[in-house]
View (cartoon, rainbow, N blue to C red):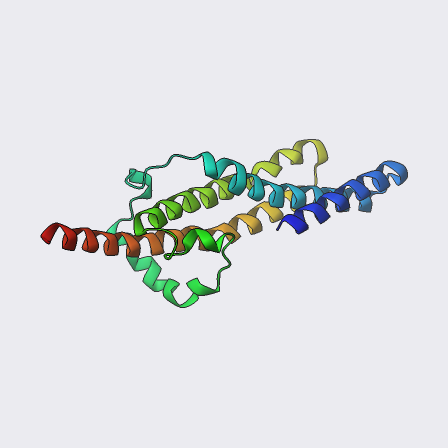
Length: 177
């Protein structure tokens, strides 16, 4: 993702210079596309690497509690079948050999919040409709990219519920000893 962000930034810079020299509408469209791409990628890196490490989120906060009724849609969506196909940005954060179940649940809370924040921030480029017009570029990219976040939010909530049950069982067994 870092390379893609760098390359989109280089493309943005190059196209901006070309647009300023030639003032062609097609170059403006390409420049805006690269601007939005650079923003979307850079924002994700910023949220994941700058904001997330500073978060102090409680896994028991009501926002992060998964209701029993929430499990039904996950079964309908067959999350269990496709969850292993989603990429993980930092797989080492989810390694049970390095982290306790409680730490893993906390990581999932932070990851869910990251993806929810990214979902909301994908719509920030819509403010560029005012100076540049051409809403198609901004609306389509914002909607498409925000939809990419949904499977990751669903996955974090689905997996966290399962791990929290396991954690409660382990804690119950330890209390009984």
